[in-house]
Amino acid sequence: MGNRQQIQAIPGALRVTLEKAPGEYKTAIRQIRWGDGPIYVCGTRSCAALGLAAGYALEAFLGLPVVARPAEVLRNYTPSLLRPRPVLVMISAAGACAEAEELVRVLRRRASTLVLLTNTPDSSLAKLADQVLLVRAEGDGDVPAVVICLHAALNYLALEAARVLKRPEPQWDSLLREFEELPAQIDWVHTQLPVVVRAMAEELRRFPHGQIVGGGFYHFPARRAARRLRALAGLRAEGMEASEFSSELASLVRRDAAVLFLSGSRSKIKQLAHRSAAQVRGIGARVLSITDSNDRDLAEQSDLGLLIPALTEAAGCTLSLFLAEWLAAEAARAGKQPPVSSRGRADEEPPGKGPKAQEAEPHEG
Image (cartoon, rainbow, N blue to C red; front, side, top):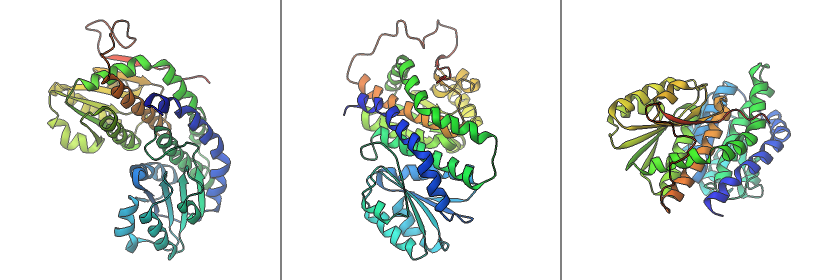
């Protein structure tokens, strides 16, 4: 399946995953003895970074401490810290990993509970798990639909656990609706924004050095975007955590570089993106952004911005992840053909009118 077909498969796979999740995840959550933490989270092989991403959602929604490590690191460096009856959330697309299986055996000695998030229900890891939570996407851990379904499912699991285990909070109903509408949002953005995504892909190809910056929930999409730009388009892109970039690296950006910021108006650390973008712009490097329509501070500092519907971090980061996957596919495609003419682009504005941006209004069902 080509890159374009892989992108087109994402909304359908995510829709089925999120339609099946409420009943399956709620039942599993009620059967797990969560205790007072910490919750251990790990991803196997190509899903290692997803394990780190899960920590943001579980800590934010459940209020329990999280120890997030790749399976190999958790197996070799953390066993001495394990408490009795620990809960381990494991993310695996391959469904088979010798280090992960050995980790499970170590945890079994402490009466652990293994919660496996996977798309391979008949795997060797699934047979070891106490709870198997499925995503409905085919392929290994590098296939865009698999990555996005696993990413959304992790955030949804944390939200559903909070709804089951904690006192009700008013914002949870609106968060749940955002997840229900997320496949339609992705489908609509894919229909409405091809011109500006191609423009941003072509812009990234113009620069020999590129950095993708995202903080909090947007950290994983930034890392994934850089990895895919390297793998598909051959670009020298590096994914950066926003606080690290802001404190140490923003002042070192070269003038012949482009920095793409992933953020949102409801990100708790959006100010890091705002400050860093201003610093990068002052150096004379190119500032690009993917954020939402209410994040005017970042949009106004961007030479080219892609504005999407305003969502909470938990859902908005998955929409940003979809756009990152799409952007990498378009950057690869742009490298194989002459640049598309900018005449008539929706993202172009007359000279002197400020940053270029394409805004997607919220989908209404």
